[in-house]
Image (cartoon, rainbow, N blue to C red; front, side):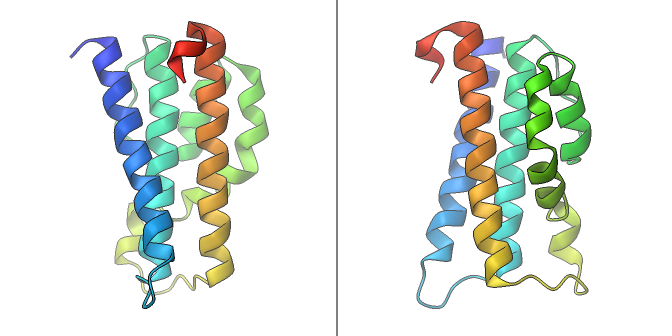
Length: 136
């Protein structure tokens, strides 16, 4: 898979995760909040990995948004503005799917959706600044 295919694939998956979270949050009998938050974390993860791919960096096999963010910061220091958002989303990585101890509120779910959108917007703008407007 070449760089463009990998970037498009990651962004399509990220978009689908975010779209799924938004859809699930509107259901009459909503899906448990932890599943929605998991999709938000996954979306942010894939957007960050996509940014790394845009710099020809093969992303590591990790769900740790903090680690991915540090890698992105090494290429563009402005990524530091996402630290608190990625830290918040990081708690909803894969382990949330198996944890019964994490108490997630509806406000947490709404915040997770907004933060995932913020990561998406930031990454797409950063990519556009590298590759030109067609990257959006």
